[in-house]
Image 1: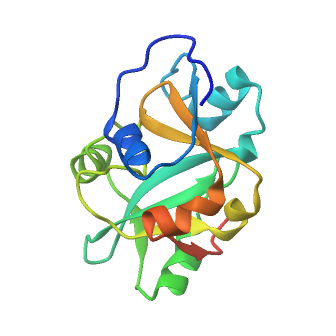
Image 2: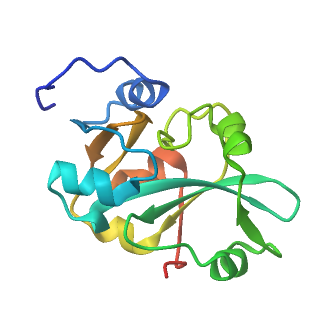
Length: 162
């Protein structure tokens, strides 16, 4: 594990990763409201394509799900709905996403969520050599091998990038 520049408190996400014996690196940056993955990638000097965002969405029955997507891409909700066999998918409102995940929006990690939710990962994310993904708080990403996502999160690969 890389040396930390500043002390980072444990989060449910880092506890989850440690419990599963996952090797990860820690990357702190100055959180900017509405800065998104473009801002974290810029500050950390990495390609935004390899910064993965965690999106809490819901189907037409308001059943929550998580989508992991490249930072520089959008989710085609139509393609996603078609692939997972539901009528429609839409983003959850921030307060609903927070209730499901247990994380503040802008700090949502797919690891250690409050509620177990199905996880879908854009298939091309799994082809990257490494990714940066939220570690459970704003301004904090963890680096890991994306090939671990299917087994760690029981994540299903989908093709829904725009």
